[in-house]
Amino acid sequence: MTQGTTGGLIVRYSVGITSAEAIPIIVLSYMLIGYALFLAVLYYAMYLHRLLTVGPPQNPKVPALVILIGPCGQFATAIQLLGTAASTRGHFASHDQGTFLTGTAASTLLTTSTLLALMVDGFAFLWITVAWYHVIEALVTRRLSFSLTWWSLIFPMGVFTTSLMNLSIAMNSPGFRGLSAALLIFLLIIYFFNLGFSIYRIVTGVAFGIPQQREEEKKQEQEEREKRKEDRQNGHRAGTMNGANV
Image (tube, rainbow, N blue to C red; front, side):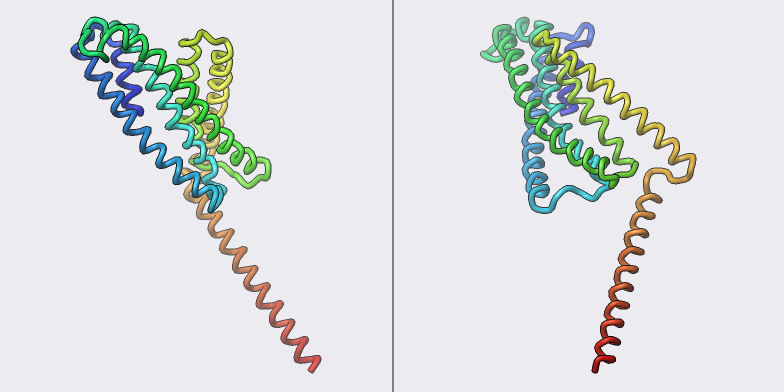
């Protein structure tokens, strides 16, 4: 999907690109995002099954749930950029061959791309509610500490924001423009938050989250050992009391 987005940007903003050069890029980009969308649907089905049967991941990995938003946001961005590249630069109209590579088809393609982007962004909003519910719940209950997985919040929400920005242009929508601006500010806050804590971890020697993970594992092992020890002591006391009663 990222390659499809890149193809749309190349065709739309390249200076002096000809129809013979642009059309293969657009066609191949459409094929690539279709390939990626099918894999994403399979991934969503498998991960939804895991969430329903096993539950959310361990606390340090909860922010990684936001990655689920990425494929939808990137697909919506890519398909809008490709529709715009096919229509606004006139490559399909100048080629004018067949039933697809024509100016009329390009205009229809642009409208269809906006419709598909709206539908896919609606699906992305479903995963936003799922992912951020678990992240906020872990934060409120103080089960989530900083680690490198916090950086996984940036890219998925970023491509979702770019898809909304393109929708705001396509529909001249003040609502989508306001939402895009709010999400952009939110992304900047998360970015500087992650940057500050990452620098702090490096300076204090707890870099990249690996020592932190080991500390949590040691703490969990120690708690399990103490629990087993307490169980043995309780069993010993129970045996002593039974012997005394006899």
